[in-house]
Length: 184
Picture 1 (tube, rainbow, N blue to C red):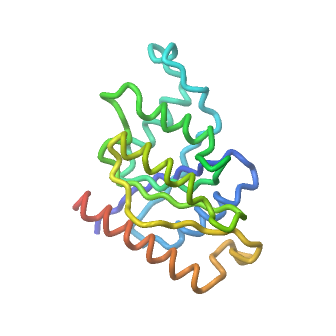
Picture 2: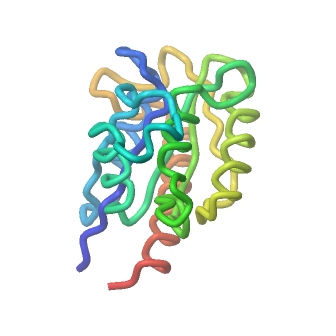
């Protein structure tokens, strides 16, 4: 059985990020033949084309991690009804130069959580549009999760049976997409 590498980009730079906690809980829903990494984005300088000739090491590390992954999952908060600046910056670095765009043809899933009632719905729509323009193969469907204190149990697993079943279905659809696009 083939082992797949999934890069999980957490679109938050908070130490106690609820999206990191959700990402880690969702990673435990993956089948055993999936390895997960969490590429850092908080140390990337703001995108500046002037740096293209001598890219910072943090940028080279990030783009290499995304390029090497079989697929990418983005788990993001929503800032002012859009995606966080730290996440947009990482996407910009990954898209340049265009001939080395790490997002092109990359199976990608999007989810996220926030305490608000509609979760990260609007921000995810912006991200879906951006990734689509860059040529990513974005999983259809929606996964907007309202964060409540009892969403995760003391072990960091998804506590609510209905939410766990919903997210398991989302993860399973993503796994099927990855396997169909990157056969053994």
